[in-house]
Length: 428
Figure 1 (cartoon, one colour):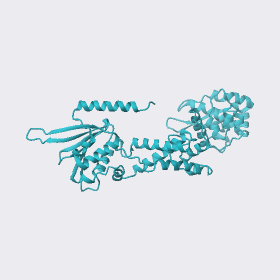
Figure 2: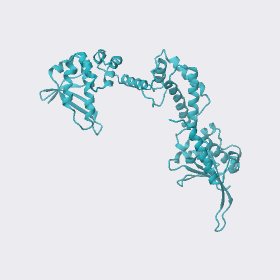
Figure 3: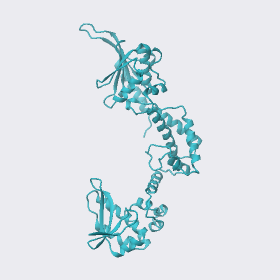
Figure 4: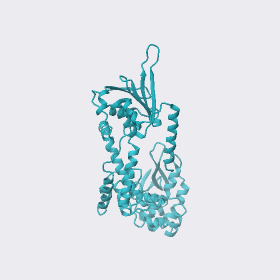
């Protein structure tokens, strides 16, 4: 037989029950192997119950000290009942100075106390009893999260000013730096909002006209890392010049906001519009002579494009890449069978080959091809080469060389390029 003897408004604060005539403290903490909450109980006396009824702060301190024992029990272990009982008198019945001294020696859950209104300054000075004078039964978990976020920043040597904190709240990144930023003006105190908006306006002016294109090599929703880095650098430099008092966390969250919004705009843009915005309009000028193209990947999947279709060749090709590209599928080909020419893109090596048919196969003889290789500078380089081929074929690619027919020479050039790239990359 189990009866509830005492409970508080917050259902998580430990309750006192009477079970088979014995008083016990019961609390939910942790989870079992099925992720269901676990319940722990241990015996208490009438004297302990009297303090728990009358003194919220002592009740919360006891809870804070018991929770690490529950954590130690894990998903299936038993609560160390002797250790739990040993905490009752020193926390509930001892003088405040003795309680403070005890909390210097034991593990306890700081977050729980802060969520229930503990004075964080007094807690940090070891005055736990005094810190709990303003304790509340209701919990504010966000208060504890903000405290720990500030602690993590302090460990990195970062202390936020009022405007820094307001900017992080505006972007929703005060608690967690990995959160994708948003615009949440209601999260900022009205007195600080105009200052926040001035910082945002500085960032918007700095990146006006800039865009972050898509990078289909990494999937349909992936964006160009170089474009992102370029916008990030531009925004951060402008914000630091205009607002030198801001800490790095605030500056970076503003640049992250600008870049993530630009990337979202790009992802929602149709591929044709994305190509045009990037300056690679594929169906203009000489493209009229390209009537049909064949796209293939490294897995043997093929897709045909016809000029009288609704989409441009370049847009159709990059859509194909976005759908099919993967870690084990990084070679894509565009072939013009009528003209006997094509290009092969090697995403794993940042290179391209142009292939021209010199002689058609006759009888038992194989056709003869000229294969030339060139290095490619990022997704922008690939977009330019694809659009150029669609417009004018292999001949139009001549100006985008150098082209190397000797494989050994090309590999040496690729190694030199990779070595230079490695030297430019900053050490982490």
